[in-house]
Amino acid sequence: MSDSSAAKPTQPATDRTDPGTLAAQEDPSTLFAGRGSLAARVEQGKAARRKAPRGELATCKIEARDPIALLDASNVGRVPELIPIRYGRMVASPFAFYRGAAPLMAHDLSKLPHSNVTVQLGGDAHLANFGLFASPERRILFGPNDFDETLPGPFDWDVRRLAASFVIAARERGFATRDQRGVVRRLCETFRQRLAELSSMDTLDVWYCQFKAASMLAIADSVEERKKELAVIEKARQQSSRSVMTHTTEIVNGKLRIKDVPPLVYHVPLENPHEQKQYQAMVRRFFADYRLTLADDRRALFDRYELVDVAIRVVGIGSVGTRCYEALFMADAECPLFLQLKEARASVLEGYLPPSRYPNHGQRVVNGQRLLQSASDIFLGWSKMRHTGNDFYVRQLRDMKGAFDFTTFDVEDLGEYAVSCAHALAHSMAKAGDPALLCGYVGKSDTFDEAVVQFALAYAEQNEADWTVLKAAIKAGRIQVIRE
Image 1: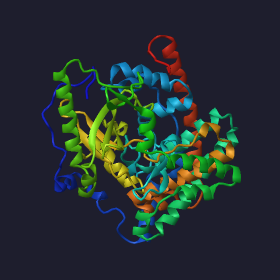
Image 2: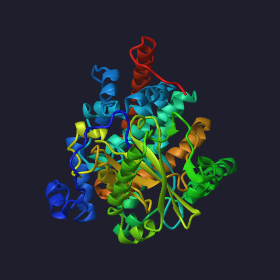
Image 3: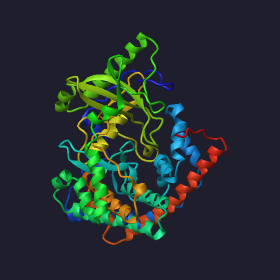
Image 4: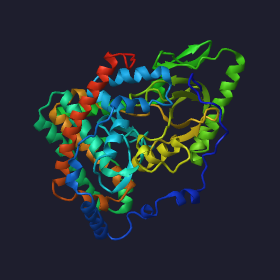
């Protein structure tokens, strides 16, 4: 797996870090978070308010900065020829810009007041990064589904990024300001109430708790809304490696092969048999290392599959330019397994928070996902491209995954979706952190809600201004784009 921007070869590195070494890197103050009585931990949360008042979370005075310079800095290490596609996707709308501008918001949040209550963050919490996915028992669940930027940090960073995304989406739909406020209030009120419920639950019950697709249907206020959600859920049930194979593969010279759809899906160009042999050896070494990150029972399952083909795939908006591949495996010559290999770079939060303690950023992403999701992909693992030193994580491609088209939502739809996202976010934070501490900080009044509402409205304005700067830079020829 290579590209024109491949780094120089590096010495093979191990990703197997001694548990004692990792423990030594932990912040001692967080090692036993959640111990002590429920009342004492709620009081700790209340005490945190005195150091970082909830009302200050409304602050959105962004100091002067060059958004293009910050975005350009995040392009370092990306595949150069794909960067124009990234900007072409970002300029499409304010929300598309927001999706690609996580590095910009991380910079802004780091300069603003924030809580001192730390949890494992998703790092890029916006409404398009929540969706349907399957548990190992094949239940359809709803929750966060993107963890590229995961890192421990102030819990309110994820809440405020998610809240701002709802305002931006509502603005694009032409909803009135009062409706934008209402949607974010529903988000925050549900988040607070769900934290209170989770903080009073048995600890194991919190860990085992799942927000199922059926729960989303129960929230729906109308028959019409339930029909819309049920259609998305049923579509997700049909997503599998077998369904992917039917429309993404073809037979070439008698062999099954992933279809080329340039410039978004294509094979690494190999000019001679020697290059082909080297490439195949490199790919097999990658998967041999990945295999070691799976639990023994998952290894036994993985060993039944044989690698058939690998292709490059351009995905997302913020991820465009990072290296991403899809790999096709077959068992019994007719049972497909599609795996996605996605490059894991340093989190955009690492410039402002303590860096990851993991030696491989793929390991950082995988462990963050396992901690934040109520159930995770059985093939979730990580590896490293030994010839370049690039870190990757691996997961199934489109395995019972589903997304809601919020561009068609009316105000009530968007509010109901905000409730579902709030349930999912509260559970992620309760599972990864201390719900009692969080509950103590957010409190029972609407003080936290109103602060987040004010921030979200203000940051949506800032996002649109930054999007306008991008459009101007493109018009002036400062940035090259490829529009699809």
